[in-house]
Image 1 (cartoon, rainbow, N blue to C red):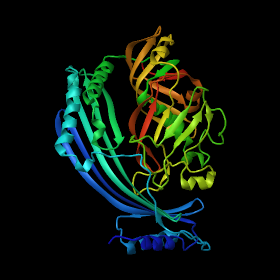
Image 2 (image 1 turned 120 degrees about the vertical axis):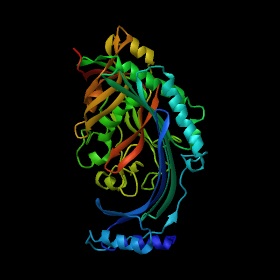
Image 3 (image 1 turned 60 degrees about the vertical axis):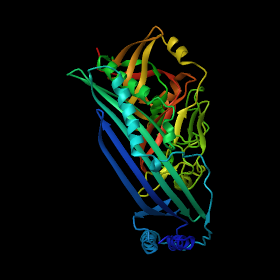
Image 4 (image 1 turned 90 degrees about the horizontal axis):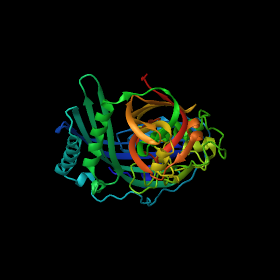
Length: 463
């Protein structure tokens, strides 16, 4: 039975019976497909349908949250009663009228996942496999191509009178290769993603992306071990932005700031980075992997300038944490699915382009380390301290990129990185990842132009 505005109003009214001042219903229906090709053979294909609703009730910043897969009116009323039992305050005079609002359009889908034939999806995987194997080396022992698509339909209904609906259409093709000489192994990875349809791959060089992945795996297999030390580091564009994402912007999310658990607390309007640094989180880039028409609280996403000319301008703040911070909501309330309560999260986060060229940065670096491809790592949001692996790295000698080195790690803090950036290129590029935090795993873009950072500790096992 399909519920009406009157039904939703009744459920929300029950949420407020014990003194709460805000309530929200979040509905979701998500169809997801995954396809994996290993060494040229389709290894597995799977589909899933996630369907359910959550209710969130707030009194100030205190929250009561629950979810269910039974979307009958009776069950949602029962869930509302269970959740409102968390409060025991005088009933407030909250009046609201539900009105469905049109969702702004940032995401446009031409060829949806549900209308794309399986044979066409397999063709994309085969193109990726062809590219991986086009780098001729007997040392490539494993190739992987992974294609994932999903269509997520959501509805947000709350006591601000909001009814908003949205469709997200996330699509991502990932490739990886493993190289081995019989003693050691090295792998490499890359991907292409968007919040759009299968038109994403029109004109995109899948084979070229895959070729470079195999090439990198073999190069790193024969590289010398990196020698540790403090040095000038050039971090390449694209996925190099994971350093900004992890070591800096997680510390600007209200999940940390509202609790006083961030190194950047009480720093608005203060210089926290080099004057050449501008950092942005922009959820409004059309069809980008981390973009949304609306966030998971029904707010329009925004282009949030976090740092401008080195000065901290804004945090990323959701509805609940704004009640603590009095900062203003930034369209950053996100969640993996209906089983999670939303909180402040990134969308598409990147350093703005600078005035230098890539060639100028390398030429002006007499001695240093070039981190071409970043890997995983760990970060403490309270201090900004990080430890990141470099998947593909090279020495810089006399203004030239020279021999490959492996096993390098970058060690330091976000505050140090921001302060020590002294050159930024004009070659902004994005990469695609999944970010995990309190509200689950969500699609986010990390990005940057090539940057140069002074005095980073580079770890390694070399002599």
